[in-house]
Image (cartoon, rainbow, N blue to C red; front, top):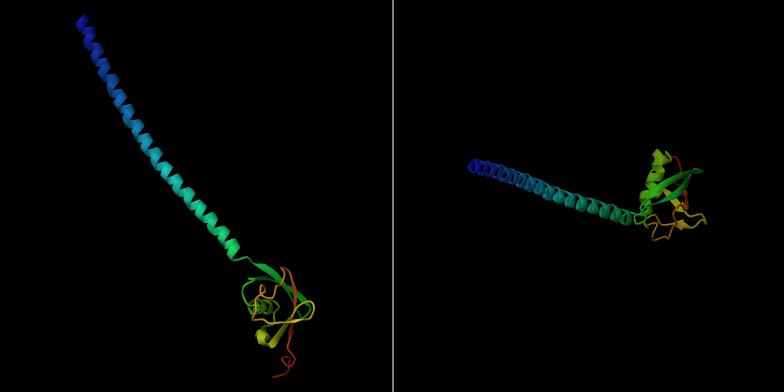
Length: 147
């Protein structure tokens, strides 16, 4: 009887050992999956950080502001790159104002609110124009004649 009991205990011990091995294998799979997820999470964090840095750099690199161009008595608010020549903003203002026949900026003159003639080849930054500055676009003398 004792032998039989001993044999049952051994079999129970073997079953318990097999359950432990199975649990250890499953636990190792869980740990492997956890490591993979940690790697993916780290990669996502790096990607997110890179995107945030790019957005911040883009904000600083392409700081834009608006200038108000008065064309034929109407205001046109134009988004301007402060480092680009004003000529580009003048071209936008002429398109938005509907001056389709005279969109060549050389036919126009640009003045600030004090009446000072501005060089369109210079940038808003070079001319120290403020965000929201009001600029007046008018045809040059002689540019409005008949063809």
